[in-house]
Image (cartoon, rainbow over all chains, first blue to last red; front, side, top):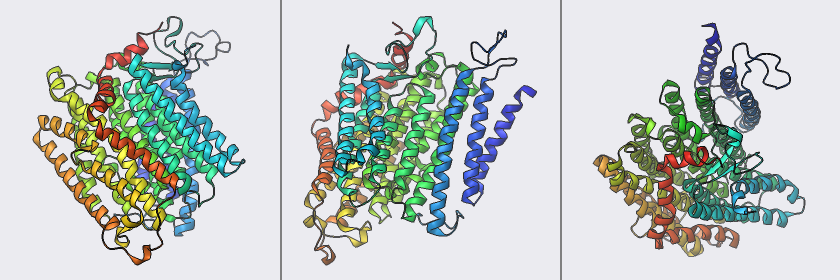
Length: 115
Length: 521
């Protein structure tokens, strides 16, 4: 049961992210929700690769243990973090431009494109 | 050394190199940068063409990135592929060819179209990055790598949609697209994680060979289908598409059309090559068909009331994507039934894929023509236009050709692929074909209206000074017109050489898997 705790956390964070994206009206909060969503997915990947009692997946540092944690999800997570960083930076700069043009960051007032 | 075996890697390396060379070339002045942009997209097109020829002649090509030997998929007794493998079958090559043509046409068009603006080194850089991301999605054989390329193309398109950042609408469209596509790509990453957690593999062919339907696989499939349908603009998640297409600079819109086809390709690849018969129930195929029907009908229904030219064409994109989803969904529905497959399933897939090619060509042409009108007159609202055929005869003729093709008027290529889809979807249920036909009629009505109001009618005095657009823009449109006319004049050749090999490759799951898992020599 306690071994599944990371996955429950992932589920809660994922839901928080989705709810944040669809329910909040402040663009900055939406950007934060996108980051939370990304973190939950990263946590999911890292916990997938964990093996109980496993050691570092580096050949000469692993020690005597038979089991190693999987390195691939960690590499995937690193890639995903870098991508999420780029997206967050872009989102924030777009919000900055929205603020400059509309004078507000409320989604209900930023609605020139409808219909 | 046979250089043909390096074509898959070259197809990605060329635009990527170009993207990072662009700022450097801009130091050498405007001409050098423009020449570089066109040259890189032209050579990418050439590579895509040679790759397509090679695949048709020699079968599936694959390329192991970072291996000591690029053809060694399973080194030293490994049971599963561990490196990133690019796998190009007839379908990937077909889509890559289609995308490369759109990229080349858009680059030519942008030379003049963008010349009034600054920041063009960034434009060229992002444009080539978007091309690289799109081609990467089409030829990669690795599901995590697919996610990386989808993000490369998304990030480049956020920048390009908001390129005119002094326009509020462009920033808003870009933010909307960024939000939706980020949620979509996170779902894809979760799906990749689910599949990795179950099979310890990321290679699509390897996963396909081991796949047994279970809870994890179902979650992954639903996430993949949902997010990829969202990225190609299917109905309930389409709202980013008309905004993004309308607000991006026109040369970019032309490429974005091809990028949405890359997501459609991903959807087809996941459903047919990774899951294949293991999909089992009819739920996912029907979900795709319903997405298709809803996109077709609501897309066109929203298009007829638009009066902004580019938004109108953008809503038609939603409805056209519906045709492809319908074709693929019908094919997927009967995948496990050889008799129905031979009767109508294969026709549906061929029609869907051929429509994807046709659609990219004529839709890109429509957007370029709308952009040309905007360049010449400064107007996008149809109510302000009129009588432009006298001033812009070439643009008018090319717009007419593209509108005839999208409405499915008989001699044109749009008719051929739509006919395939009508015939085959009728065999599943007549209602599907009825919706497709009604959509086609409404499309025709809508484009008759656009052509009539923009190009025909009395000349307006405000347009007295309007002249035909400069040669590079005409050249960009001419490339696409030539392709549309070619597909129109030689329908049997293009079906036999373009669409059918692609459809055969799509349904041949064991061939796709065997190229990686069986070919370890």
